[in-house]
Image 1: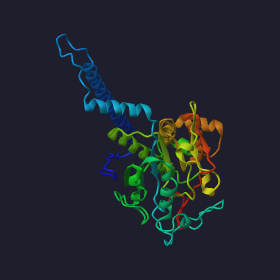
Image 2: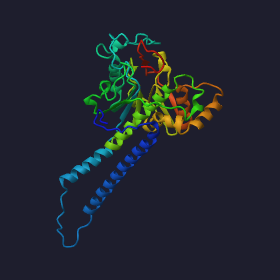
Image 3: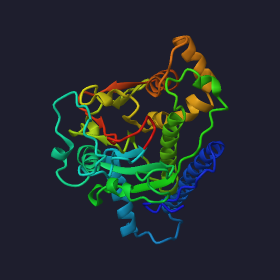
Image 4: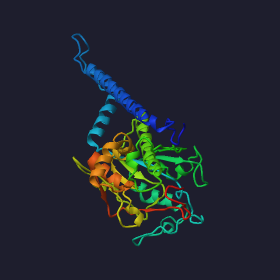
Length: 366
């Protein structure tokens, strides 16, 4: 499959193949590391050979370093004296229902329930799609160098859902040329997940449309998988990851990523949105920023909590709240605490509002 950004991501025909794909990505990453190590050793061997003392009878005139040697030395000094640069991966997953929507659209959300005095979307972005424009203006501008990995699942069952392979919506979130980043996008058929394998854990799930949560978790996993494949292919790594929904309005700029506190060794944090702004921002699982090692587990929790460790997670939840109902938000909070040893920290300066279509039919619908 050819994707925006000229990056290829192989699909799995069903969820049972995902673990093997994950293993494949890990092997690709390890292969790249091995190749880099071989190249490093070859370079070191050549350097040592050139530094060996000359044999008796050889020309005693001291050889002058070549321009190449000067360049290598200058490069080493530059790396030695420079700080590690931050490069952010933005993982976008979910339905694009309002990302492209104009205020003139009959379905444009008007009841976005602000709980604080915030600028309206059209005040932030006077022309063009306000949701996409605000993400570019108030989120992307604060990230420095970043790449966008966008996974859109579609059932093609409504006019608002894109067709498989139609990446038009992704272009609205393409990094600007000045940012130095890339866009990797895939629009694929939404997988039909089965809950039969783990019925126990779902018996106490709050909502009837239980498959919706699996779609959300699987979308985040696929997005993270695309990032890993990008790293294996290009060698480009990321220091931080942002979890972002494409139907989210940011009325004000988020803080620069350099100003956020992600905790210390042994006490990691994922920064999430404030309770202020809109009441919909109180859903802790809809936005997050963290260091890559923590966000990698955050995005892949479909396996940690739903599949590989489902029985263990359910046992702990049952002991924590006997007979209680759990939701996606509570699952994330306790998964990050119990499994990842990390906490979700709300930041007062991060305001966000979910922008659902005015004629949205039900939870999980487009």
